[in-house]
Length: 102
Image 1 (cartoon, rainbow, N blue to C red):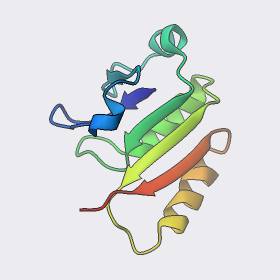
Image 2 (cartoon, rainbow, N blue to C red):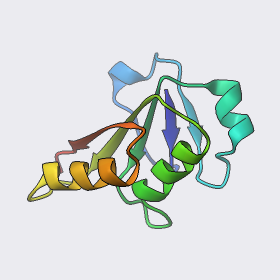
Image 3 (cartoon, rainbow, N blue to C red):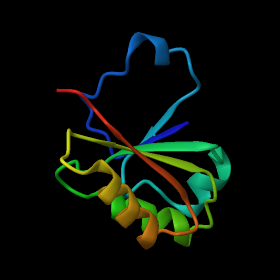
Image 4 (spheres, one colour):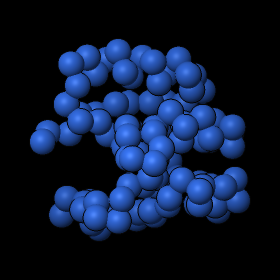
């Protein structure tokens, strides 16, 4: 799994700390990095202050990624609406939007 665009202070739950994970910032995402890791899943925040999930998703699509993308979002009034919008903008990716409890 590739974690994309999370801040340095992001803490993984204990259950995830054993998994094989790679963390990359938005500028570090290149076709070469993606090809060397070729993760089956990439997780990213909906917003992180410097960029948003849509820009990550568009880059992944441009690089030919066809795996699963998980977008982590704060509680939203209509999570399905956000998911449908992201899917319409990055149609070749399998996108799931999950809400994080505060």
